[in-house]
Length: 259
Image (cartoon, rainbow, N blue to C red; front, side, top):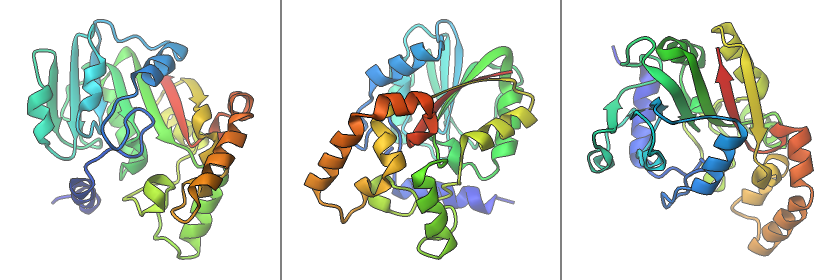
């Protein structure tokens, strides 16, 4: 019997195909390779000769960032036309979901999860599946929105008092409702992975999004552009040191997780 939440997610992302919630890919599907490489190097993640599995790969455009890998496999709820265009000897795509991964045990050296973890209907089961397919020396590379900040307070209040349905508020796309936008925090992420047997965690924040994490109204549809620009500029003056001390002050955090 189909999982109702997964079916709802499929339909939502069939209607909303653009990736608008990732720091690495904008709504026009432009890939921020500089940011991707900077984060990868800071977290010491190596893709050379690695088997990469990308969970919730969306359009699959992230696959264009890899060149010296052994093989990249993207998996998503929906099969997209882009997959045929992007596929080659070292790149393939499958349709599926994160709680029932169609991969063999120990079949991945790197599992990538770019801004999809917060949408998984059963995060704990997804982590158990990630552990199963990940090689003993493999790593998880994740980007995930974080709500252990002011944005999280707004999310809690908005959903608790009925402004939005539960697990739908996010500042993305001018505060339009999301589908299964869970209330994720660094503590919850660690708990999910620790319960599955992971022991090593490395986290970094994103200074450019400290303004959204601490003042999410900057992306509100009613705020004037000049005011938003001024607030963004002022936060830019303090973003770097704040982000180093408190990574969850930014809207997104980036993770390297190992067994």
